[in-house]
Image 1 (cartoon, rainbow, N blue to C red):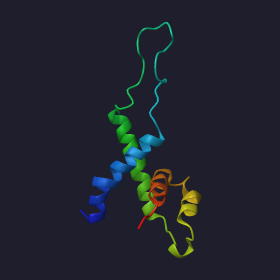
Image 2: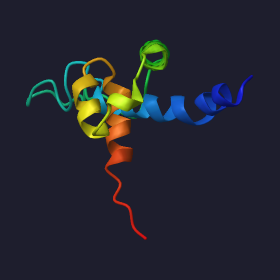
Image 3: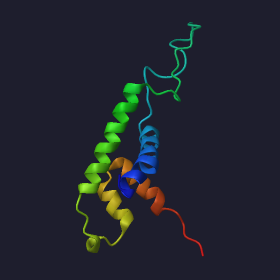
Image 4: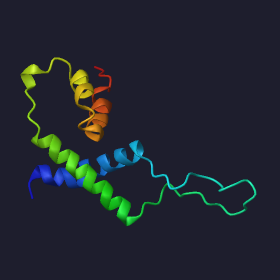
Length: 109
């Protein structure tokens, strides 16, 4: 396994999966009670993810990351990285969100 693959497995994929879940919260019929007269709580535990949801999330994240890695970026044409990500965020929404967070970190000396 290459260094990049190891980094992806240990750090990047878990981070992108968390971002995907943050950007696409799981909603099955809403939260709280079905109606005011019903004493059963039909809410969703947002901290529990079914294995099928997790598998779908991993597939989406993997597909986007592979698509991004195959995308040719001409670094000489990029004047402003934030504008570049804004232009391409519809194609890479999860990676773009992470990139904007990283690029938005204010530097100090």
